[in-house]
Image (cartoon, rainbow, N blue to C red; front, side, top):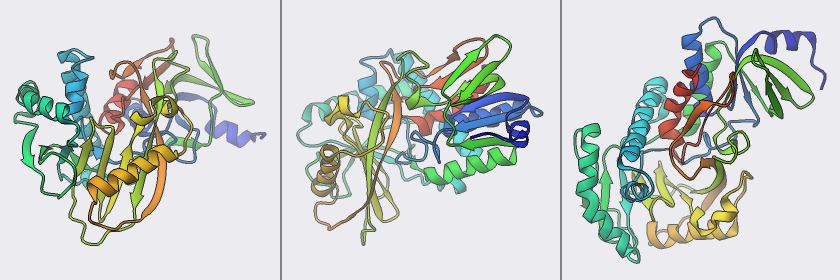
Length: 370
């Protein structure tokens, strides 16, 4: 497509900052740049019709890690790293709530629960044994116990009678969140162009030339906020991970409220009003789900339905209304990558499946690299 003089002049001339990705990280980075550089020209490029990765496709958990996930992380990260990660996620959630507002987020502080299937006896015992220690190391941050043992009151099936409750978790509407962030970006004179794929870029030390297919333009700084699609620019430090999800039709007299974690976080579910959303199952096929292609598989969708039928809603009829998937960005460590790639090119990626929690902070940190 041949661009007109007007299009080139108004969208692609004298661009100060170009952000690639219009998700949580990208829009927070753009808004932070506007705060720091009020007179600058800021352009956001998005390859999808809507934010392409996971920002509008996640489950809407305002969480920072279940007890079993934290215990698992301590096996591959230092104690200091794990505490810092949780702190970043918690700070990020507060930044998100401040930026968007609880009303527009449709934030519901129902708390979060971790369930343990009866066949996961070892994990259950390990979590109960280590619960006091995890509370102790998190106390300086939260000033009270994060995790408490409670009796299951939701009548789930096939689980241990005790669950782990976390009062600091909540639910959000991720679609409403992204709509509000987009509104704020537009009202702050940030240009957003959808269905634009960056095919190449070159930093010559004075500016960056950015190619969008056959067309190219110049920008002073280029910022990548592409998370699950960042494998190439990070030389394999970020790998895509697909997350599959489904949601039921409304269920009469549903008494489940909250966010729920199962099997070390590989399964997760919540109510959305009187519906149940459930996602996960990536551990059934790590290789197949290490993809940036959207889609659902029979293996994982069948397992999600099985968990829904046998564990969550054992005595209730339900119908599936919709299925979808999102793309996360993972790596050998859960520490985010926020760093320059060259003199004028930067990235804020590898959110470790915690984009809702940590995305706001990573967006701010990305903008503050400049």
